[in-house]
Image 1 (tube, protein in one colour):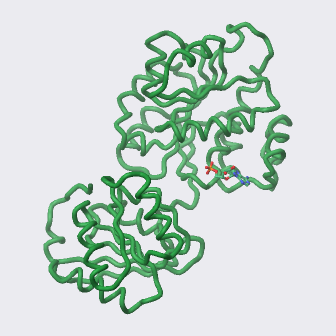
Image 2: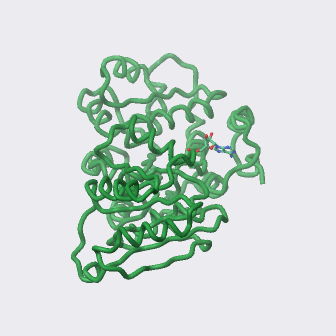
Image 3: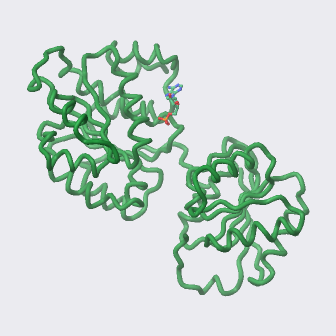
Length: 364
Ligand code: AMP
């Protein structure tokens, strides 16, 4: 199957060819015709699946009829709004929009907080068809009347689960209230918690569900094992398991930042090279630790699952839950990092008696 088979207009096909893509990815194969047909979409996909082109291309296709070279701001009403949780993600989407719209006279902008608002305002007032924004800064522009959302035809909420984690849901709801009711809406999220489903109910009309190889689907190539062990013996059992598989690397999940550092020290003292990664470590330090792990210099990475979110490691054979996660989703999400792409993986959980009755604790 080619991009032309998906029904995209020639200007977009040309941009895709310029980008060097020959074949659509699975999410693109599903999302592009669905969005072109005008449906709302609930998409389960993570970065790396081609998700961005999956919504950007058909979005541009839908609004291409508004493309024009007039200098009048009135001829450049905002037709598409893409919300992303962070400046980096917003910029990535913006780069895609620019890449794919290069043969169409459509204007686009990326607006995010933490920088001077004035240049953004000046640009927005010229009229811009595609606005990519972080939620807070978009609302600043709404308040300052530098943007009018009354003609938005397509809304995209990217990485909705991260929006939720970052506390953006009230902002999103305020933005939804400013958009025309008869718009098309697309929501993308790596996970579907109850809260995301609630948001989807409010935001989407008869959505088509599109899912591709979600990482929080437990892969069939993973062997699952649970070791019952008293809490005091867990560290020793872990060291024992690692010693018995001297050539494997392991990602170990623990509940707290404190436990993270302590366990890494314990393993080091027992001759197993290990380091910890958690939210209190600086970005630079986290990057270095991660690089050491990826390059194989470091054998064991101990992490809180929040810090480990987004860790992308291929062919990781061993994922160990030092504590049993409290929800099924927490269980499968980290395990999804092993056994990908047909590789064999092992998932091990160390469970003590207290944990089968303990009340849920939140992870830090
Ligand atoms: P994304 O999941 O949207 O972050 O995209 C991941 C990477 O895949 C990006 O670097 C894209 O440029 C690239 N990509 C997207 N679609 C295709 C495709 N059909 N063929 C090859 N690469 C692609």
